[in-house]
Length: 245
Image (cartoon, rainbow, N blue to C red; front, side, top):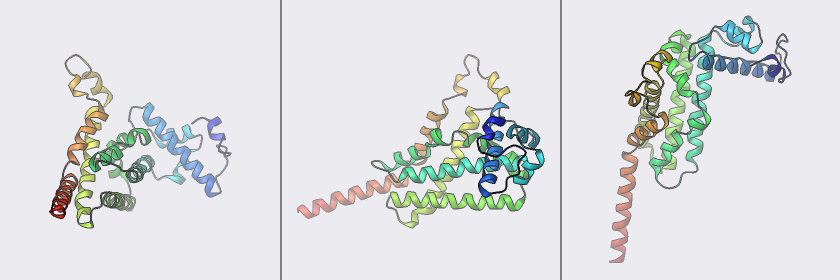
């Protein structure tokens, strides 16, 4: 983010943020700068100094908002991840037709709204989390568990399932997350590896991420919800037959 863009917030690079709005704007500018640098450096974490310089602030200012570069990228990851869960819940409110297809479509909404969630997720487990303060990590995991539960509850409500299905749906959500992360890591290996597998005869090692993800998600969600829907259809059919007789 250049100085001109930064100036649009009404907060100069040397001016101290005082109000909550100004602090939010400065924090957002650091996150935006961090993401831009991450993309420019092909997934390599830049230093706090580089992030601060990109955002037009001093390194000491960046440390007021974040304890480390890992904390910056964990904040970015949470931003994308929790927005994805919220988007899934929101999209499910407009469900019509096949429930499993609706869930898969909602899960794939990251393509439009959270395009960097899997890049950040790939950094989270082995690079970011081990470097975080334990209390901060526990706070993240607690919020994550709440997001899984809230999203599973939303699926139960829309699918008209009782709370007995909640645990299984949470498990399937976790499986979906793991599958999507694995797909991303297979399709988008480090740059040095990408150049090695771009030759003739190796195209099967780089499938289309979105299509790959869609196929696997349909398999994950093709179980109990669909089976229960069929059972209800059969029950309704038998009930109508008995009513006629």
